[in-house]
Image (cartoon, rainbow, N blue to C red):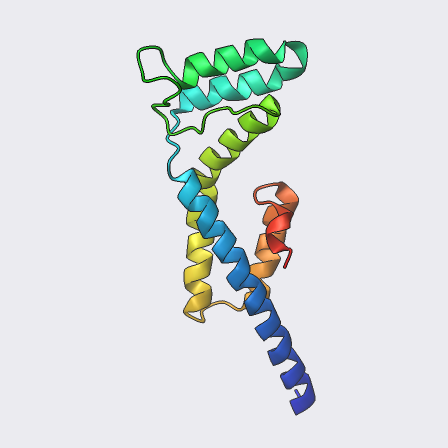
Amino acid sequence: MDASKYEANQQDEEELSEMLKQFFARAKKTYIESAQIDLSEDKRSTLETYLKDFENRNADEIVKDVTRVLFPPGRQEQTSVYGIPTYNGGSVESWMEEIIFLDSYNRNTWPLLSEMETQWKANRRRASDILKELNGMVLKGTIPAVWFVI
């Protein structure tokens, strides 16, 4: 490889590394938020069922059902035993999707991302290789594409 191609590749790798720094900062922030959530498989399955039935039911009914599952009676008003943020209005469907995303992120996605970051920082993997893998995760819907917007 001639020197000019090497310099271009090196410059590309530095730009990609900067993109990864910002990406992993967002990923860490999401992990901190998701680490509060601790849904059992049963509760998660119930929430997913409510989400699938969302179009066929009244949103107020779903809020009541979800509240009953995630914020059991006898607890302080609107205090979840599972670390779920309370519903403060807006789209009920989006709120439920966010809960499911954060639970899945904490259990499945964050450990993978954390390992990628460790390998990248230890120079065991190149930024371009990691970004290719992350692109696949975006295509599968595992991580949001907006995390790559600089």
